[in-house]
Image (cartoon, rainbow, N blue to C red):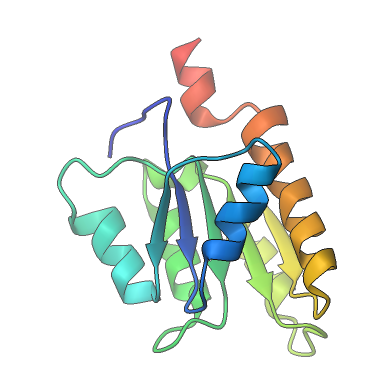
Length: 145
């Protein structure tokens, strides 16, 4: 996996991701987006695609069909190259099972409950993305300095 300054954002969720692109673009955070609708597709991109670009950040929906998102989180954090990639996990509102706490234990960089209010969701997403893509020093930036 190659580190590139123009690294894409990897979005793993089965829902439409156009809202994410619009939100990031409106905040000046536009990046190329790789969209995977499930964990198996994301793993194929990350581990089986020759010359795949290392993502600048992964937005991971835990409620992906077929496999729970924690399977992908474990694969990311267990990989020598990818473990430094920031992973923001979207979990269910209420999180009664403690799934988000388990994600932190597994190495998630941030967790967010899905907001039912779409404006609140967009605001939270923009704040998180702004931090990870503008403020934080990502591995791509640190290695190119």
